[in-house]
Amino acid sequence: MNKKTDELQVELARQDELKNKKLMTNMWVLLCTTSIFYIGIIYLAIFALKEGPLLGTIVGVSTVIFVIVAFYALKLEVEAGYYKCNNCGHRFIPTYWAALWAPHFHTTRYLKCPECNNRSWAKKVMTKED
Ligand SMILES: [Zn+2]
Image (tube, rainbow, N blue to C red; front, side, top):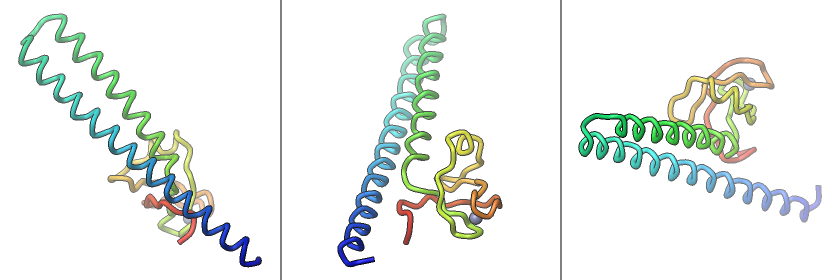
């Protein structure tokens, strides 16, 4: 590999990392804002309405919106960067479905690695290589 290709690779990796970080930031901003609004709306509705069908509708509709946003936030998280296998160190992007059903702690998910076929607590990383 010559020097120019090398530099190009580094530049591409850097752009990839930046893009992934941006996606993660968007994900957190979206999730936090929605959570705050969701809790706020529920509190206000309970406080102002006490009971009745309107309260039920408000709680129901905001819950549906919150769930949709949570699913979308997961999509952003899966698309941002890679998961690093705790067993062999291979970095991979899981399917949305696999990520959805994987137990997780923060952004570390219990996923099956396509390289070694083992399940491990795969950490979220922003780059394809170190
Ligand atoms: Zn592995």
